[in-house]
Amino acid sequence: MSDFLLKIFENETINKLPLDKLYPILESLDEKQLQNIATTYSLDINDLNNSEKVDRIGREITGRFAEVLNTFDEKEHKSFYDFYNGSVDYSDENVYVNMKKFTALGYMYLFLSKSGTYFNFVIPVELVEMYERLLANS
Image (cartoon, rainbow, N blue to C red; front, side, top):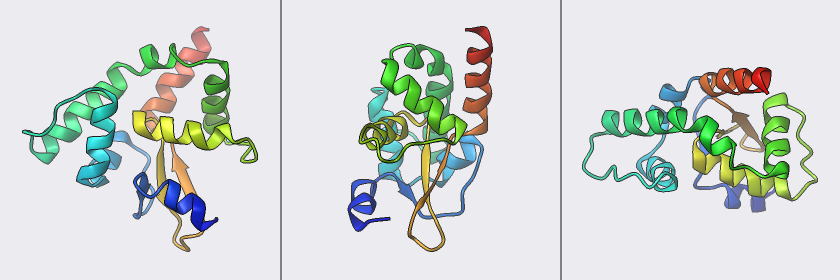
């Protein structure tokens, strides 16, 4: 991966082994990463301890998942589906814009590979299950 991409996603990158569940992922984020997600949802988490921050952000992500997905335009839906499906076209410049959006929403997390050359992106299991229910009902 180019240094350019590493710099673009520097704030979103988690330099730990990938996790697949939302709350352990949130617990692994640093203060700045938690604050970035909280800001997306207009949450004030400044006076909370870390476990309260994680709980508040996690409830907001899961509680508003369907509502926020319904605000996506067609290209964002396709991009999220491609990430969910594991068939991402990285030559599409919108992929990187949407990666920023999905990480800011707490829908996707970027774990740096052991070699530091690429990202392992993770959509938490809880969100995958919610998304699959939404797909089944549409």
